[in-house]
Amino acid sequence: MPVDKSTHSIHIAAKQTAAERREVERKQRKVITWWRTLPDSKRDPYYSITQLAKLIDVPAASLGPVLRELGWQREEVRIDGNPRAIWLPPGAASQKKPAGRPRLFPNPSTH
Image (cartoon, rainbow, N blue to C red):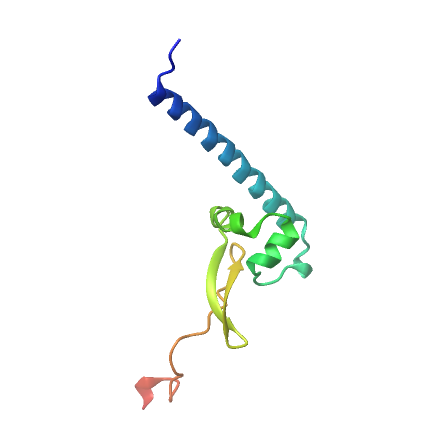
């Protein structure tokens, strides 16, 4: 019996998508479990992707989309003068410093 190639490729793509989705969900469960079991005293305000990959035991290359889906935010900051990408857990305050020079006078309406 001949196989209809158009529907056959759709079924293969659907299976790959389902398998990929299961893998993403597995990684999400690992992140959630790690974060929930981590005491507040041990939580850092931000993490590098390599730190997270080692702590959670997930490849760094596939971790970004998983973190984004869980509400983590990626920021580009300068640490020791070098640009770095950091990941902030959900609800964490931004680590970015304000851009530009500080005001000469704190309240411009008084001067």
